[in-house]
Length: 159
Image (cartoon, rainbow, N blue to C red; front, side, top):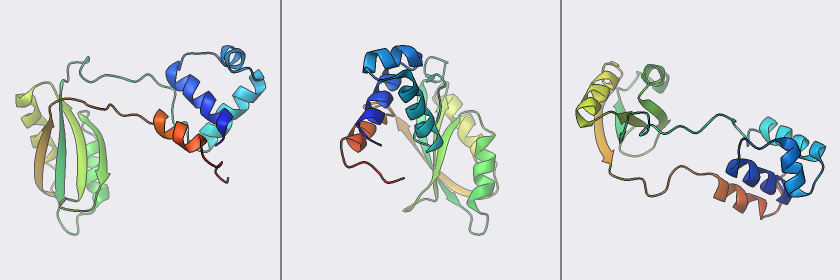
């Protein structure tokens, strides 16, 4: 990634509905260059999607919690991940090191509904134990643009 990639990323991250022609006008580079950069960044996996960012809170899920799951030895992470992927309130899950085996970020309509979500998560026989932490407030929302700015201000990456 280089400085032009950074400018393209920054512009489209700020205004994802912007057209390529308008982006080329604002950046002062050819339309074909903007499109080629977008295509290159998507092919490299830097740009992972163009969908709208959604707010669980605005959709009626104001409670966010993080579950630390301990997985029964020999059960495997894949079976647990497959189970979690079938639960709409599970937004993401990660295998981890440390006290647990997997973290899952979940949302719920209320604290009582969170209990329902946790109970549903725990129906997977491979999960031995779960601990839950409820998020009180979002201090820094998920973001990647500052990282992209940092990455493009340094030496370009090798392909």
